[in-house]
Image 1 (cartoon, rainbow, N blue to C red):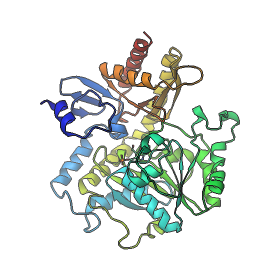
Image 2 (cartoon, rainbow, N blue to C red; image 1 turned 90 degrees about the vertical axis):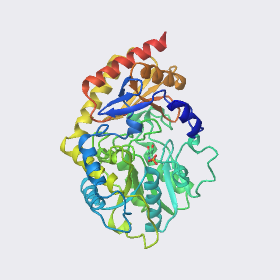
Image 3 (cartoon, helix red, strand yellow; image 1 turned 45 degrees about the horizontal axis):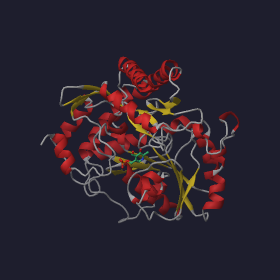
Image 4 (tube, rainbow, N blue to C red; image 1 turned 180 degrees about the horizontal axis):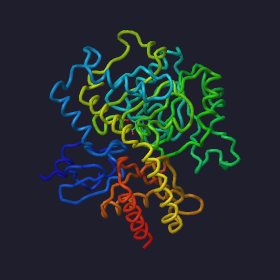
Length: 427
Ligand SMILES: Cc1ncc(COP(=O)(O)O)c(C=O)c1O
């Protein structure tokens, strides 16, 4: 049996529509190499993970050095250096007064912890999330995920969850125009509190740029408006930076684009350039509502992952990777608009921040989602040596989320490959 056959026989893939037809052997920077010798420009980074590039030499060296010393001890039983240094670093680079970190292994676990601490701090149990959101695959995180397709048959979900309209301007839930909407989606939060909850709301959770929902970028003043309402009702703001964090959007954390301070922030994916690690950070007054016995993780804060994360963050900061990602992303989006959108009616919208970019495909002027076409574009790209993602609540958004170290010449090639794919599709 070859690798694919073994995979199909022994790996549980029943929940996957179709695997990408690539057997990856190794990867470096923004390039992935398959076992058959084929090279791919990686514009998906293992679902927006390898921000500092595949096998970033500094990250790898730090992980190797740590492996020679200590691989595991449990960060909540014994002291060791890597979690201490990483927690200090996270307190320094996250906005405002966030200064106490809990380490987990994944994004979903980080969010589980964040929800729990919010409940314990406020003494309230209700949570408000956004329609079109995605926060993970555990029961609590699915409960706050605003997408039927992800939740199908996974219930019963947690009680006390309400959903506010997504700031999805291209498909505005109120069918308004951005110029004159006066941020109705944000102001509507008050209605959600008044008419969908009992008033015992612990937290509002949102992705500052929504990833799985289709790279939905909230309008500039969205979070300021949201925060006004939250402050009025003493509701905590949890920003889920699992996908948007660590430079992806052109700032270390996407909420920094919006000028508000979250009370709790969750992270994973780009935190350690591919080593498994998640975290949530909050203010000491909130963190201290956990009492002995309330929380723990065996593997969370693994020394090797933490050592990798420290080197990863140093690299991102020292090399000004977020700033560079912003420039590259802006140029790329302009190129998509100038070179592709004008040529292909299939492209309905191009949006994003930094290198978190979505290209939404439509069949007609009524914006009928072109989801089958999105899948075909992905396949055509792969054949030409480019890996991209497809997502969105309607399954019609091409996701361009490469390692942030991708070179301009590679991004130019991505435009050429997309051009070729769209023209083949039109044939
Ligand atoms: C915004 C967001 N939150 C949470 C998660 C869940 O993270 P994990 O898969 O590490 O549990 C994801 C994963 O895609 C995500 O995009």
